[in-house]
Amino acid sequence: MTVYKAMKNFTAIVIAFSILLSGTILGGAGYYLFTKENESSYAVSKLGSSGDEVKSIQRKLSSLGYYKGSVDGIYGQQTKSAVTSFQRNCGITADGICGRQTLLYLGLSGGTSSNNTSYSNSDVELLAKVISAEARGESYEGQVAVGAVILNRVKHPSFPDSLSGVIYQNGAFSCVNDSNWYAEVADSAKRAAIDAINGWDPSGGAIYYYNAKKTTNAFMHSRPVVRVIGDHRFCK
Image (cartoon, rainbow, N blue to C red; front, side, top):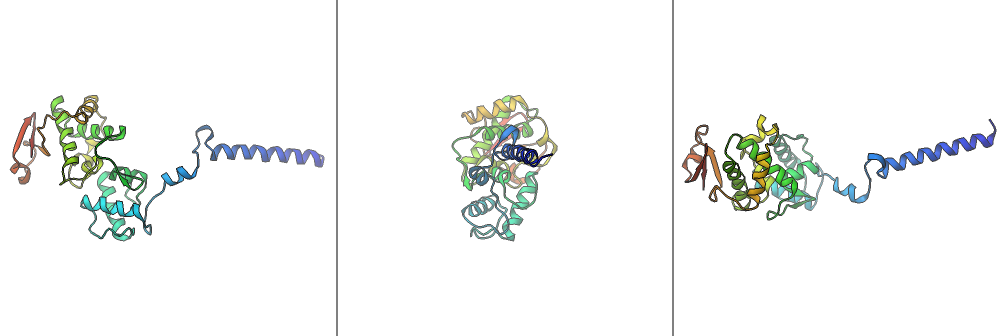
C-alpha cells in the first residue's frame, strides 16, 4: 500500500469516526442532544451543594415534615438524610441525591415551586394514579370526591401547596407504599381527575376522608362528616 493510499484510508476513518461522534453528541438517531440548556436541566443537588435550589428543597422538605434544620441553602448531612427519607417513602431510588425525579416528586422544578393554580399533564396523571389506588371499587362520584379532597388540600394552608407535595406528604396516603400504587390506572380515574380539576367537588369541600370499615384512627373518627359516598366518609 502506498503512503498516499494509507493516508487516504486513515482520513476516511477519521471522517467516519467524526460523523459517528457528532451523531452521538448532537442528537442523531435517538441519541441525547447535549447542550448547555439540557445540561442545566439535568443538574442535581447533593451533599456539598449550595444555593437557592437547596433552599427550595429544604423548605419543601420542612413543610412535609422530613427536614428539621435551618433553611440555609447548604446541602449537608441533615438535608441528605431528609431527602433519603422522602425518596424511600415515595418508592424511588433512596440515594439522598435530589435530581430531576426527586424534584418532580417534591413539586419543584428547577428549584421553584409548581404553580398550585394550574396543573400539567403529569399532574393529571399523578392525581389519576392516586384516585385509582385510593378509590378502586368506588362509584365514579366517589372517585371524583377523592380527587377533590386532594385538590382542596393543595389550597388549604395546613397542607403542602403542590399536588405532588400533598400526595407524597409523609403518612398522608398509605397507597403510595402498597401494591395498589403499581396497578394499572383505571380509565375512570383519569376522567375523575379531570373532572375534579375542572371544579366538580362531590366531597363538599372536605380535606379528609376515610373508610369507616378499615380505619380505627381516633383523629379521623373525630372529624365532622360532610358527606358519605360509598365506603368513604368525607370530613372537614
